[in-house]
Every structure is written in structure tokens, then in C-alpha cells.
Image 1 (spheres, one colour):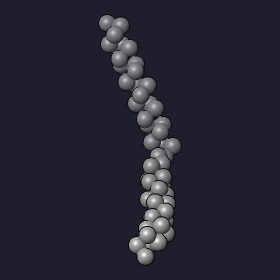
Image 2 (tube, one colour):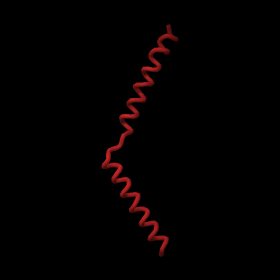
Image 3 (cartoon, helix red, strand yellow):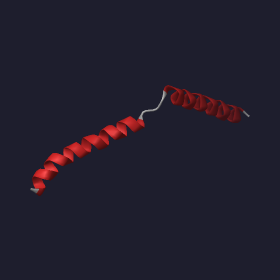
Image 4 (spheres, helix red, strand yellow):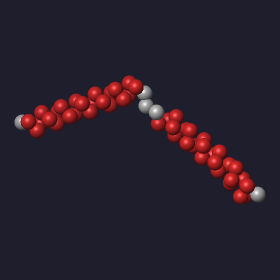
Length: 52
């Protein structure tokens, strides 16, 4: 009984957790744009600091 329960519920629970993680891990386009802009700005600052 326990083995059957684990065999059936295990993959179902795993699929639920996996789908939840995928759904909550997506970032919006605006977030990506902000991140890319911040990265570009940071690199410019570092290059300017090295040039001094």
C-alpha cells in the first residue's frame, strides 16, 4: 500500500512542484530590460574608473 501510494503520488507531487517553480521563475520583459540597462551602466562606470 505505501509503495503504491508513493509510486502514484510521488510523480504527481513532483510535477506540481516543477510547474510551480517554472511559473514563479519567469521574469517579465520590463525586468529583463532593467537588468540589462543596469549591467550596461555598471560596465560604463567600471570602464571609466579604470581609465582614470
